[in-house]
Image 1 (tube, one colour):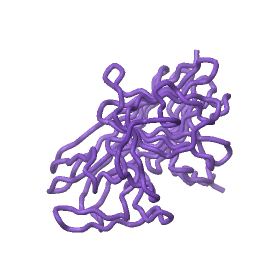
Image 2: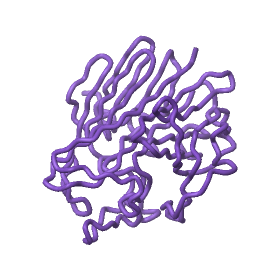
Image 3: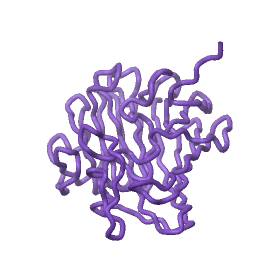
Image 4: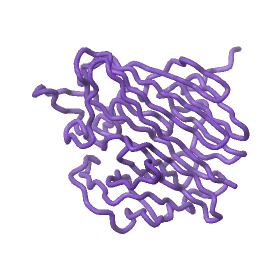
Length: 303
């Protein structure tokens, strides 16, 4: 009998020195990243799909669109409601799509999937994800190309959960250099921005076990021209989620329901925050035939 294929589709394994990355075809998700036997991301079983959106890539929007409704040149658009508990359209249009492998090598993989015109989003786009692994780090490039005859609105994002496997996540400290955050309503839709205070002020680091929120941040500082969000262990080891300047927003979700662990933390780079199709905050428009690319990565420091 043939071995059943994992529920998240074909897995592509990349190796470089002591580092290993597994990329799933479902949502071009980062299924795992290990360095020297230390797991740097949460993962899931062969019979499961990515828990809590773990590792998936997000296009043509990140996070939520309120009520699945937005206006395109004065005409209301209605997207499928994919977050029934809050009545929103969430995490883009490729969460349940299998990406096609364009090229796979020992330490790199290029996958792509199309977004076809549909009710609520009448555009045709191509999303390409390039994973590149070296002994030092993982780099992910997300590229969106507009195959439509008209300009299309979009945002990009990613949903990795970071960890240092031999340390309970609640004992890790998160440092995220952001001056502002989005307040939200009971549907997790932004209502405005305020300065960071209390547990949301991560500029000098906060222990994950002391945090309980699902919040997007703005006013990100740059370090050497990019954003760096650092998860550190008490012994000084760390893992950094970095992103180029296009990812001007970061969402942090501290989960107490991720399968198999007491705490999990998603650090999500985004080019626009939730409900950007309505607010216009961070929203970009891609001309017909044009492409946009942005890059993020994971950098361990385990020495």
